[in-house]
Length: 291
Image 1 (tube, rainbow, N blue to C red):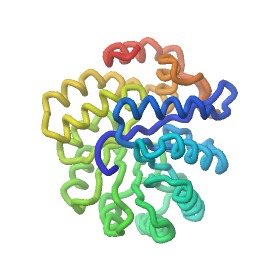
Image 2 (image 1 turned 90 degrees about the horizontal axis):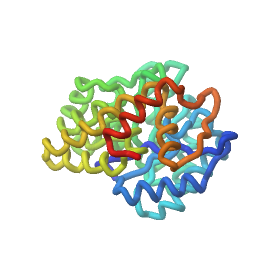
Image 3 (image 1 turned 180 degrees about the horizontal axis):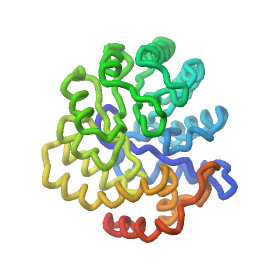
Image 4 (image 1 turned 45 degrees about the vertical axis):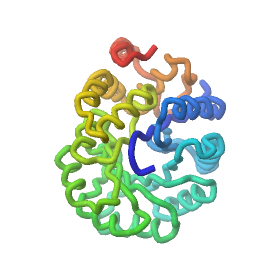
């Protein structure tokens, strides 16, 4: 579970925004058959800000039940309220998740000591492997490396998803973290570079639409086949860029719809991808061999 390519899976929805659980099950099969190492359910790509608690638990249960041990299942359970994060994490454990991914508390801008106490409290309350998630571009809250490494001393805090896109910060984490503390890239464009520097894998948006290639790139990078990994990454690089021309998961949901894997549903305040980006996304799909 602690290495390789993990897909930050979208939440399929009908055109009216209601959950499409059959499409979710089909997506899970798609990723399992492609060799993906883990599925992350109800993360940023899963539209967690607009998913209510009942839906959150339903999505985790559906994913756990359908994956049925074929692939490890990581549940997004972060919140800007520590009590809510504990409640979500505790229920994810009951539902059978293998681990939890906890985004930094957003909007309320805690201090580094507040962040430490937040994560330490969740770890103490729920005995399940937990992965820190730092994405300051979305949360307005930056988990400093020193704080992350302080948290790494807690036994069930097992890794971090670093979505800063900073190779300098990622390298610093790799060099200073305990050997059993996993460093994942949460930024597809720099994911290969971080793995070649010693990172353990990626938690990927691109893997939603190109899971086999992303998996193969991670295998090549982790096994020292640098030229192979670079060749695969070159095919994927257009997707790494174009899937973020609008806020995630707007573009990736559009591509999945074009692939016939999901319907067009997305929840306000997110809207469907602007037509001005369609040609660029199609070109990126073609370069990656996606129909």
